[in-house]
Length: 333
Image (cartoon, rainbow, N blue to C red; front, side, top):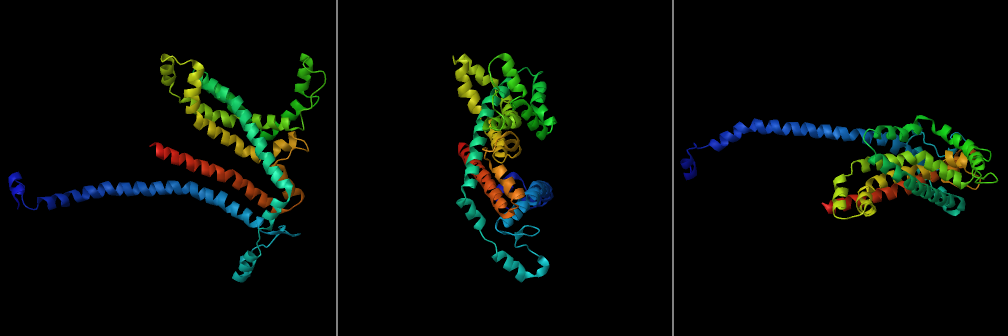
């Protein structure tokens, strides 16, 4: 027994007894954490299993077809794997795969022109949607709280109608004898009907109309959470409203702008229905090219290669951007 033990009046070995007494308490506090950890892993595993089943597995199937050769058969490509044929047949099938289809895409200008045209049309449509959607989202966020549910419902209302029906409705609006030309003629703004249908302008109108809610909704969610006291402080310091908007509102709304632009740009690049119904023969987009190769030419390997490259073009920049944003956030901390 040490002097410290004598001074405190604690008997020898009390530390060991306290440790023995506290042991079950420690065990009780540790085990729930382990259980919560396992539950967390299981919770995370569910979306990963979903992605593995419905994204990665189909992607690898399409990727395998893109390395095959076209054939007059069912399915229209070779080789096909038959697990009952044995390991040697499987290995010979693997060795028969090649990247000739990807080389073909680089040699034919139709494909890279389709990619470039799709990106340009999608980027232009996204910019127009941002110009139109930002004032809408800002007005919704600044409207009285009693009006916001109604305004939000009006934005979501087009989703209650079939996407295909909405696109067909634009044909009746934009054609030469359609509602738009009839209205402009009645106002006396034009003397002859405008040719809008079967042009890139009609494609822009269709994409902006169809995907505008995808930009407004995340932007509205960001602007609604904006701390209005910041604007009040800027006003008290003598900042005019337009300067407060550009220096406070716009920077703080960038997460919603980025999310909304992604939600518009990504599906617009691979859009098929809108350019096929509203665009003309000169409208070149990768979705139409993919449809032609897959259904008209029945060239599944080439169409699969087109789809794989399209996915990489869209996914890789987004992943790099997210990693850069995450590193910037960690540095800011």
